[in-house]
Image 1 (tube, rainbow, N blue to C red):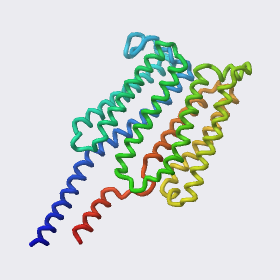
Image 2 (cartoon, rainbow, N blue to C red):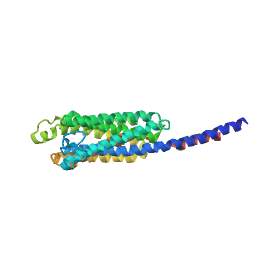
Image 3 (cartoon, rainbow, N blue to C red):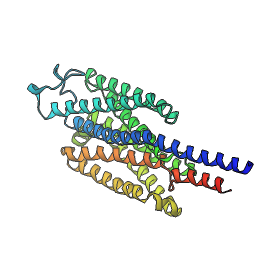
Image 4 (cartoon, one colour):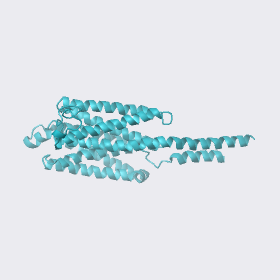
Length: 324
């Protein structure tokens, strides 16, 4: 009788596990899909912001949050006004999407991990700060430090969103590989610093002054020199993955993308300088590459470095318990 009672308890526990996992997966799937849309929207926001800066459209709408006192300024619409208007529209949609996810996390807080509502509250705070910096860029007439802060907060939003997505995908990582994460964190930090220098370069007109008059070249030279430690750190990651073959086998798509982005980023930087920064397509592509670079590095840091077992692993554990 004791044996039958224990077996019955294990079977009930097994059924409860299945129901619980499937029940929660409904909600987590929704958050994963919304998270994927958020990543795409944030990358688009960063790239459109870069295009707005390159096309000198940052003050095309002289007021904020409206544009010429209207939500849709048909009477003043041109390329620059459209870029600034669309940049604000995308920022507004990103904010609404994050607010929607935060609201869902509060409503479903009993069915999702405890950390999720707290992390979405952080995202919501970053959105509010980002919007404040957006207003200040107009009020302060494109002050260099304000523009730089605006971009870096956008990158923080992107990094936080990707980390949430990966944590939802992975659950508990059995082998976190701290040394691997540290190795990936180093180029991520360098890329953020490089982006900071790049925005300072464009927002202070230092690049144009240096190329035209050979003056104020410190920021430009620093930006160029920073490419070397970033390249070295990426090559170190590739070498480590080759040495530990399992890492290469599980992450080769991301690592291949990093190599491609590294060389294309260098090529776009050289082309931008060769054309005296007169070809917006190269500069915008440079910004897009930086965003993708940060996105892939963040994904590699927070994703499971090896194939995850997920629900099957939990169910197998229960099956072993029942069989025993």
